[in-house]
Image (cartoon, rainbow, N blue to C red; front, side, top):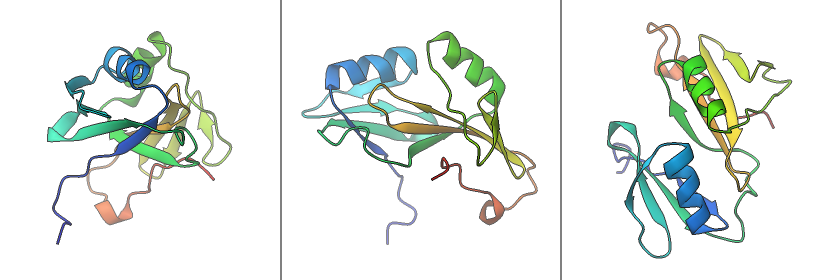
Length: 139
């Protein structure tokens, strides 16, 4: 049915103009459409991230979207230089913002509305996708 369809995470934000500035200027996404009421940003591999204004912004207690990166430490350094703070957790245990997730590593940060995002660096290429752990933050 739709198992082969691209996925477009849709994120609630309080202030569309402020959110556009964050996703475009801090995270570096390309704004492709500032339609009403939301906005669309291009991400890697032909994927997109959508934002829309909502009073429910930042109320999710889980990761709202994750991004696969080739070098987690380099990405964290770059984002920290842009003012991003990374979360620290006890489970999975993070050290300087990074958690080991089986063969993978992950890190989490929040946008200005409190939405949690994950960065994931995949480990050993021989690990099958079904064996990879989800990069959501602890509950």
